Image (cartoon, rainbow, N blue to C red; front, top):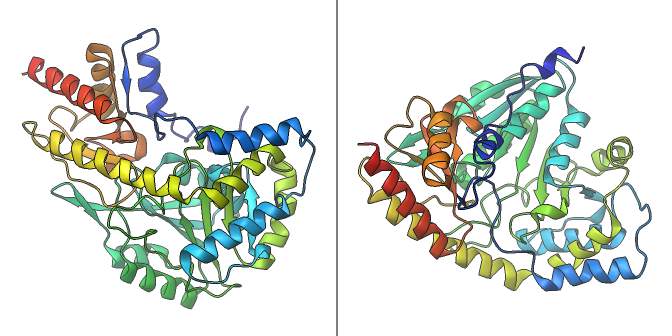
Length: 385
């Protein structure tokens, strides 16, 4: 009796692996996209102060004006461009931003080109709305991922929108600036909406302050939208706070959609977001440095294991690697890993058919925990010979 489009949505393969480990207490878990450190105290204290002050009422659909202005200042500073607060909408998480964008842009039957493999929500949200998703797979060579831009442009012809998640979950692939430039020019020429899922834009390991992109190049009223989140760079996954930057006319209309979805983000959570942006640059720099060390350690350890194909990714917080035994059924392999040695990894099939044969390891963890995880994987591989 439910909508037929829901029947084709894939269940969460990561949750399926996690459910296989229910009741086991000695797990080392790297399956979800979050770190093992809590939100820093200076952010938590801001929310506490807001709660103690009784800041628990409805607020504007588009978010507190103070937070919208802080996001505009942050983005302007980071990208060396002027972003007006009128182009900013606060959302109840980054995934809510993606959902609102899809609701605003897509009618049933519209085509959307999406670079894959990718976090399954990115491809499932348009399908819920009845849109046709065209998957454009990345290619892997020696553990490193790349995009055939011509293939993406061909898929984008006649599409309503193109969605690019870069740095990418799960591969860590980061779209080079020349490809961003060419894609933006193509979308501009053909009137196609370009949507950047920028959840990991601060998590790059080449010394740059952010990943390549085109936010600084597009006109204020151009068909370009950046969706972002507080979850990753500020260790705020459970807070469910995000934002988007879009044309002014789009944002003005979006207030109606937010009203019909969540009404508004909680004000005390938004107060925490203000402080995170205002005072959080040292935290972001420390997070990137810590993740870089963990990434290098994990890549070194995994590449030393017989038959494992792994390389340090340029961005995000995941290492997507091939492993003997996972080539045909990564879901079954991940379940066996967790039940036999208590090692929790995400199966590659969770991110689409392009991910089959791979496992995703979130390296936002202490070095000691990563070492223990590799030790368990090594023991599993030895026992499987």
